[in-house]
Length: 322
Length: 162
Image 1: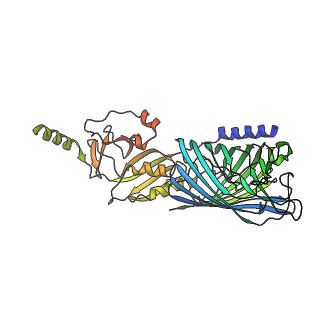
Image 2 (image 1 turned 90 degrees about the horizontal axis):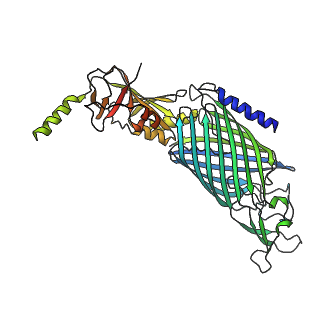
Image 3 (image 1 turned 45 degrees about the vertical axis):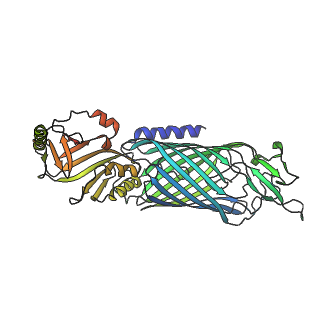
């Protein structure tokens, strides 16, 4: 906590002492309130990985971004991962971390669409405040087996929306997002623990969730902008988290033996919770267009059962001016 | 009929077509720019305008120096629209002529656009005083009386103070 206060003091000192420079808000893992230029196509490839026992779990995604208008941007993302098997794990829903370390196929998980509308901006020279609203929807039919849903990184199907506020002053950028996620149910099967018996049809209802983030960005290089060929080096610190409700699991779903597991039988991963991850990151922008990000998420307050820490993120992105 | 003709003659006499002085370039100040990628986006949106010949971006001052094709029609309102399409706002727009405008030409036509200077101060550089080309705060701050020769739709020009 003391280190965190020192960090905030340092950031405030930087804000008050830097003038006539330009800030960065191209956060690696969260969205700023700014939108893309009209009729510009962006392509982003990004990935997150973490170690689970003796293997690496990886989610990779291909995102197409397009500026419909100067204040309206849309994204379409395709997700691929080795996070999930074709069936829910054995021991689900009674084990907290079922099939930990088991090798799953790397497969296509689904797609996500996102629409961001910038509804308010106060622009000044080298300074701006912006507010945007977003809507998102995902069709990701995976056997995600934790209560915490995730639309933006390819775990669940569902819809969501929220608001983003971004402020820049000189070399420093700060942005905050507050959103709601309404996950849709997953209907599938889980293997019967008794060998030889058929799979058990089940339905999982994930927790309704409030997602929140606070992101800070600082332009390290160049000290003075002169031309587009100068490399840009940016430092970021993102705090990202969620508060989610309980899951509900129906076993023998759709049969005359259907029942749902009562709340106190659930393991912690299926119960309500909250967390706030800390994600420092670094970004290099080549020739004012090609953007390369590296960041890593660490446990802050509480933790996410859906990933194991540290989670490493990498992204590469480019704009095409049509 | 005679009265209408007389008023028209007065208006024509007071509105001198500016042929001698040539526009050298336009300076477009952009607000809200946050990165070199953002400056590049503004430049790419401006370059889509067919009457723009060349652009030099000053990344530090966030100003675009824009050269226009003489032989094409200019659309002044395309400047703020292009900046907005890039996701930013126009701070100001200056017209910079090759030579100083002579004092007596307070209202003039240039490339089919009516301009009126707020006074006869000589200058090469003029701020376009119009709500579409400035942020609201600066527009309200600069409050000038329209010269008598100015038409209702004239673009008002404020000489740049040296």
